[in-house]
Image (cartoon, rainbow over all chains, first blue to last red; front, side, top):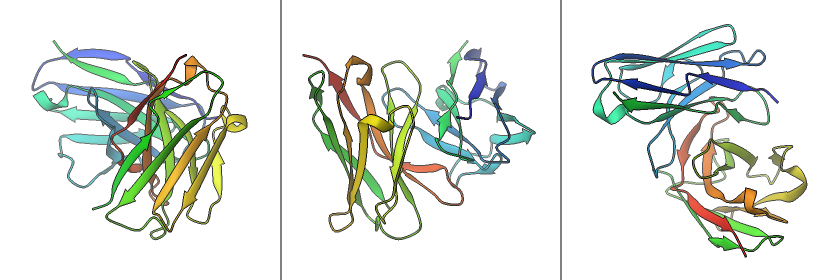
Length: 107
Length: 120
């Protein structure tokens, strides 16, 4: 199985901050990395797919990038509705695997 | 707009079988080359992919659960189902059904999730 390691596991930030979350794959996954946002009591929602492609309807303050087996989700100008938990997930091979999550909290 | 809705028993006794169904509405389960997955999330923890099924009936499972899980599809009823055998308290979780693409393969549509508790 491909292991996905996210960092940090949690962070505190203020509205307007630039936030960066990192996900590292245990082996090559090409660009096949997806990012999800999950709010309490809700299903996850896809933000970014294939490393850097913004899902339709997702605000442009979200962006994704890749360098080898390292992937980054950036939120440029954190908004109140962005406080949530974020997960990465690889779709390169089976079984599909997720990172452990990063909780973004209000400072 | 495709929507997914999970249904099934919310309470299962240890050693028994967990059974859930995901109804697909607003679109065809058979078209578009999609995969249809089950994903679970224990309380306060992360996400675990259980497996997926294709409209043809071919299914792929997470090796960690493969010996205890069956996913089936009924295209005539536009639904797919999960059966997890010999459950323990560790199987207590919110269970989601989700649609996955072929290319791209992200899970783009999710059900609202259903809580299943394993307890005597």
